[in-house]
Length: 260
Image (cartoon, rainbow, N blue to C red; front, side, top):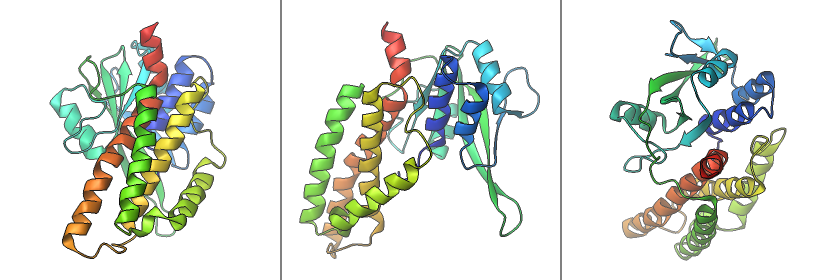
């Protein structure tokens, strides 16, 4: 979870565009980021893939009043509402965007293109029908914030007890370096999001970074199979909490709109 999900960028800046808080050009630039190009295929009324500007305008015309994020994992269909075909595709990609009011969803497929030494990334979003139903297991911002604070504390305690290299000052320095790189030249969320959503997303990214670092830094002092298993058990619920919080942050403007 060291990288920002593309679904998050699409939903955040798409929501800002729908709310007339950014221009189409600014929204597309923010969504594409460092990728070369994004296209959308399967859009109703289009026989071939189209660019993001046209796609976002068409989704609004089709009734999309907001964009939600899903970040599913095996056994955890976080943010999804069906049908099974869409859920399976989203699970394979580990992310998706659902259009409120249009019964459509978008799943990214990422390609690398270009000659060796000049490879660039292209993204094709597959537009598919979705079921209009409440998303699975998405907490409120308040719930997500409380869960994250507890998860960060519990994970640090458990990983320190297991003598995992990713739980001490080195991990803290790595997390801060990651955040500095990730946030350089970009907004954490698009215009229109409440400060609490920004705070929750930043903490979710921090917790996700801790999980990733602890997972990738070898076995530390956990040399036995039981200790390695204990580490996995400690990290699994923490990673789940971090994903839930990311979805809560990205979806917060749509959730607030639905409560009015």
